[in-house]
Image (cartoon, each protein chain N blue to C red):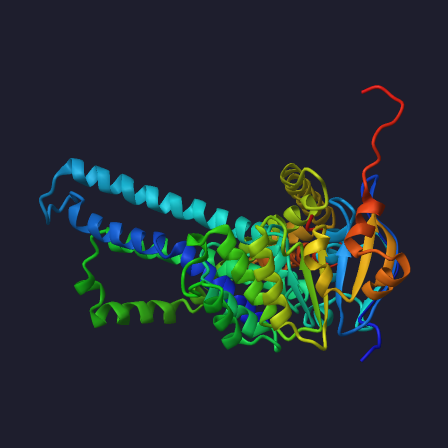
Length: 254
Length: 241
């Protein structure tokens, strides 16, 4: 059933970002040819270049805002608003509903970051002919062989980033679920978010008192990355379980 | 399979100090068309939402087909809400796909055929449709299922008399006759002729739950007349405005 839910959440994501993702890439490509780089490969109108770079930055900013809105709206409208009348009458449990929204939100954020990264690569005047030479890959391979830890560092860093993203999203979900229990839902959601943030500080203080935080920070880089990842797991599980419990036991679609 | 499709004991729902449902004891069997009748604010929608799992009761017990409300009961309930519940990007066929994925008893071809008979093009985007057309799509979704329990919340509210007949005819010609249809409304005269049983709700309490035949026999009047008598607003007497 989770796959079936994901199918519809991904379709919704596709509709929401069908314009903005290609727009960012197209603008980056146009900027690639119009920006007056120092090397002066192409002579261009500087005013046009400024306008295009502003447009590009605006699209990237719009994408960031769109991701935030999408993450919040897909959960709020989809499960706590009118669309909730459809989703909560499907023969699935609240756990699958929340998980589907969470997976979709994470994928949307990651794809948006990837689009931003690709757009930046497209915009700068990289000489792809030279970059893609076999010698480049040979150098890269030799470099990795000389420092085998580099790939592991990268993966660990991505793990910390991914878990931070999931932590933020699950915290936002729980805030909205708590806010839903009150009459002034939006205000109470914001209050709940602030409250959960304060709890996060208390949690870090607690870990510090137990000398766990210091231990993680003073350990080698691998242990630090893995320690931070492990630290984020309890709040992620707690926030997710809390959201599922509220939707399962306290749902009130008035 | 339980004899009773719906059973509740002392079902209560309150919003703060306001009690929307007050100790409702209910037993509803199978293969019936039942009117859930009451004025606005009597608790009809609250009861239906609790049956669907959209609201949690404050206290009391509820069993549908012998089970607590959950994925198993939702699989046998076809619910028509009192509002639009679909996302703007969808087309009717997207909703039909969704229903086919989740409900084993959903008949895709029947839904498409119903749309055509209702004058709706199912490939059109929902956001381009009028409110009335969207309601038809929602009706087609609900009635294209061979459900055990149909919960129809005010299906004929806010439409003209001709459209009411049209909607009722659609419901009557498409529902699963082995299942039960629970229709909430305050427009009694329009649906009285199709009802097997009537439940009168007043201020969250069940005033009457009886077969329509018994009401006519024992009271010597139509359900509509009895409803008007029970729910007639009391004019202010002896006082000043």
